[in-house]
Image (cartoon, rainbow, N blue to C red):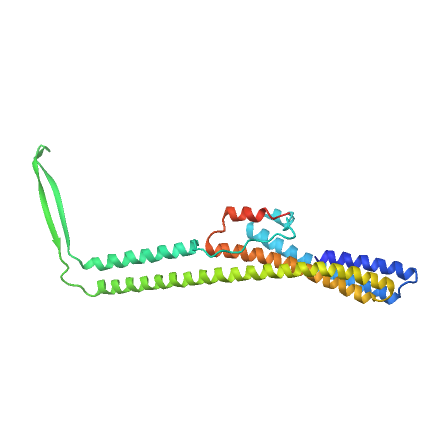
Length: 275
């Protein structure tokens, strides 16, 4: 967007240079057009440096140096994601926390049964000196009764109970956090879609304004400043449209991540909207 704005100012500066040489525009108008062009050029170079830094960070994170100079496919101009639908989360974080809660429940059950009497029945075959089995087997019945406890078992039960309560609290907290994240991203996506629609409508009006300002400039009813400011507004609306589009897709991705549904199918859906 900054490069497009720089080109628009460059075209205007060139046009004002021609008008100045023909005696149709003052030197100050030509210089003013050049100053807007230089300012846009500085913004474009700053944006290019930020993009380079992001590429380097991505390459370092992934471990693939080819990403530094890889071609980036942009989104189509009007491509927007669908609204997020509320759904039960399939988040792996939640599944892991639920497994932790179940494990703590089993731990507590085992601690509770540690003091229970145990009854075991065993069968053992008898052999004679020639290692030949006799007819029949011996059976033994064993009953174990805990008669005295120093308090370690009770302490173990209490500790297991506290760990279960902590795991349940963590699961409840995560459920609320994921529900809040889904609602937040749904609102974020809706706001970005509305912002994109507003910017798109404003951009169409700005293009007409630029054309009208140039006609007025030729007729002497509009100044060079009016044309330059109209170009600036056009560039700002184009920037807003692109930013809102990117924000909408990021909200869509974050919402699906919160639901645990950002998978290969969702990535393929995103790829279909690339240029």
